[in-house]
Amino acid sequence: MAGTLSLIPTGHAVPRTAAKVGPGVWEQQVNTGVSLHFSFEFDNPKAFAGSIAHRAVGELGLFGVTCLRHTVHRRPDDLTRAADASFLLTLQLAGTKQLTQDGRATTLRAGEFALYDSERPLTLDVSDDYRSVNVRFRKTALGAPDAAAFTHLVARRFSADHGIAPVVWSAILGLGSLAPDCQSAGILVAGNVLDMTATMLRAHAGVAGPAGDDDRLRRRQAVQACIDDRLSDPDLRVDTLAAACFVSVRHLHALFHGSGHTVAGWIRHRRVEACKRDLADPAAHAVPVAAIGARWGFTDPSHFGQVFKAATGLTPAEFRRRALR
Image 1 (cartoon, rainbow, N blue to C red):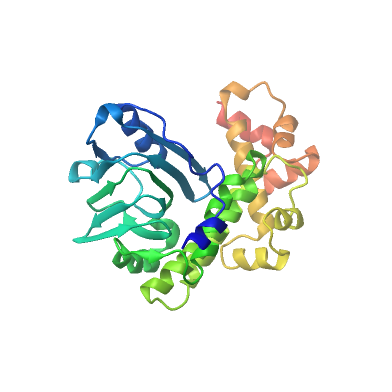
Image 2: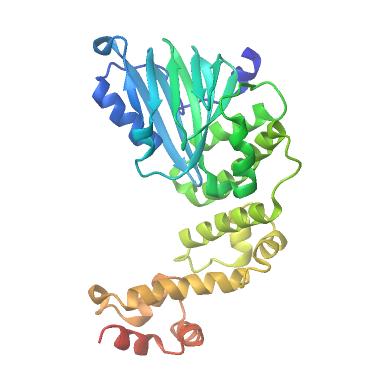
């Protein structure tokens, strides 16, 4: 296992040292970083130390933890706090952790990982000199068939040495090194990493093959998020979008087949919706119509007017007058 761990690029994803911190502050840091509510018990609260690093990329929430001994719970009261239903994967880098859920308990050592469910009671008993990297993903991002199948994997120990696990964990941690200006591409890459993660978990669950419709929907939604992030770019076209998403133009068209929109049609639709929102905003009443069109990628006022009227039946000026009456 040591060989596998040495190949996993933890980088800045996992703090190297634990900083002394009060129990109340630690609880706030963890609950904020993980976006779930946990309860905590400490053997020696005054001597406790811990550090957490977290980042969201697309559908994935990444967090790395370094800390001393304590116990973490998801009790029935914690489960009532509003949060998206999620699975969490945890990979042990140092120390040990006993994970208890659904009547099963498993102890993780360096190079081992396990899955747990945010919707069920949970106990994590963490040792001193503890380090782990974790990833959270919403069940709805997986699709119902995978979500149901993966429920049976909670609190089971798996090796990071076997199958595609080393590749999956390296990809998960590699997301943490993406520069902020790569956020659009990061959404697509995170979608691909989620696909890899689901493939790994399907193998453990004995599920043959991906859920095709759910898989295509997830990929299309990732492309749509990339489109929204680039709407103001006048050079956003099918070919430039494909390049930004690291896929072929043919693949993009296949993702949108049967969705009710072509790729170009979806870009126009989202641009028109953005323009409608700004045209109906009283605070923007003095902004020229052409400037609003240009803000959302329509550099030619005449073309903007034609596209907008085809979509709404009104010119941009007529739409604004009606909206602001």
